[in-house]
Length: 140
Image 1: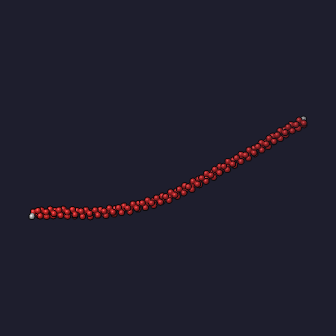
Image 2 (image 1 turned 90 degrees about the horizontal axis):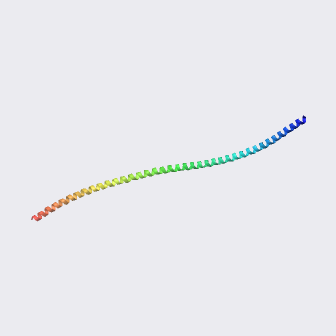
Image 3 (image 1 turned 30 degrees about the horizontal axis):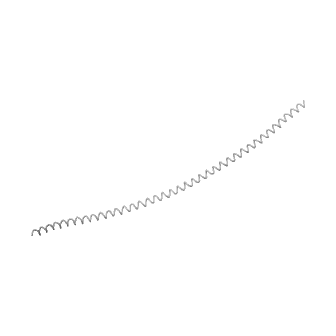
């Protein structure tokens, strides 16, 4: 009976040793798998961080360009407003000069009309005088 018990104990011990060996092998395999997964996750995280850094760089670049364009637009808007003021001032000057010239021409035309009217009246008077003189000369 002792031999049977010893055989059973040896058998159970062998099974335990087998399970222990299998368990150790499985633990080793799990450790390897965990290390592989950890490395893959680390690599993926590094890739995502790299992509994130790249996107952050692009965002910064776009933000800088936007700020630069906003600055340029502000300068151009200011220059445009200044140019508009200058054009308005020149239009006013030209308008005033044209009004003055028109007024002077109007005065000149008025003087010319008066002179023409006077000359016309003198011409009519001379014509009448000439006809009267002609009649007198013919009447003699």
